[in-house]
Image 1 (cartoon, rainbow, N blue to C red):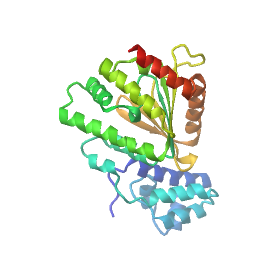
Image 2: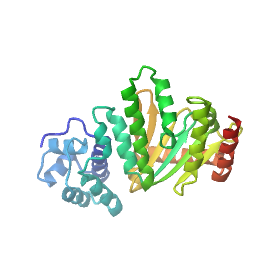
Image 3: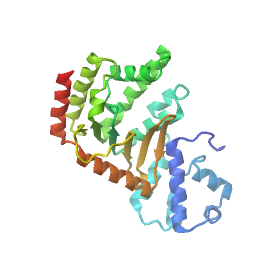
Image 4: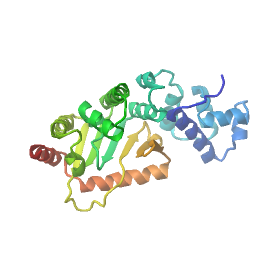
Length: 280
């Protein structure tokens, strides 16, 4: 089978983890390839995500690398065994690959933590809010394309059925009238409804909160089956970027913990949202 020309972010991540496991063991790619009776080019394809790898080879390499974390190895095996096409594949060719990568990442999440200063988290938005936001960013977006973006973001909400979701939202995001007063009020009502779900927690940072130094970006921290497979998604002018690596992940976990300390409790946050809703 020829190498993949456009591996998904999850396929790239599996390859990167296989490379990290090898490098931690101090084994060269040439020696790893020889161990599998393969060649360095094929090993390079595996570690770049351009070629898949079987469960048997993942476990053989993990043993060869003396990896003593069975949960980590099992999680890699789970990734290697993924063969099905998720619902997001219906949108391939219509939306950017990075958007599909985000949906796939959310689908496999064990938990998610979101930080938003100027926006309501996408998974907690109403369709009217989505439509108004997309139209504002790109006023020339054709109606059919707009419908596609709204449908895609709406379907991403299915990920909330299988994970816990915690959002920290700044007061600024609550007060921006995206689409108008009617749409904004409906969005706050919907946010309140979502915050009552057992697996969804919403915390608000008021303008007068002490200890919050600000953040000029939004962030989604996605927890994997093991902490080594966590990922941070950041919004950029060109779409999304994904961050991993244990030291960088630790940095973002610490930042989120610090920011949560500046936020209201979930109960006080619901009262705050009701007050803002009443002021619209």
